[in-house]
Length: 256
View (spheres, rainbow, N blue to C red):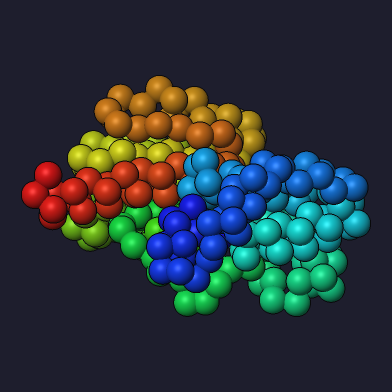
């Protein structure tokens, strides 16, 4: 349960003050055989702890997923393999695997998604990173629109979606090769652009380094760059920006 939900239950008489105190007095992390799980992260940041699956043993991953699900009622795992999906499904039958984004997810349904994030890609080869970003933002409650395969070699494709892109609270741009799409989008929108260099390209792209340097040296204002192929980081940051925009809109609606 989140802090607000606990307080509402106390107010409504569903939960006693003693029971609420017991919840808040819990240790801020849970120690298991393999990890120290930050079960209070949602209280501090609004988002529960996410599992980086790659490199974990089967036993560790299964235990972590099972415990986080019991604590939070939802779990997101990144960089997961099909074999790890089979492992987690044995302890969490409701887990869902996306083979494109390499994500493992357990989340309540239906989940309310709000706001407006747009995710753009230079080409279809950037899809895995873009989907990691889009589904991460969706997991954390943001509404996402996908505008894929609108790279600079055919700029008219992007311009045909200009109204959609300009309406977003935040735009994520995933692109490899020379990574120019982030600068183009940055020059067209008033809200933040999160650039994600992907490791897509031929030899001189140096597995995304060329796109990374292009995005870091962007002449467009309002473009921030995350690490190569870091769709998760982009999606998380976009969700935070989207949440701030929603708070601002709601505040204006109240006459503030």
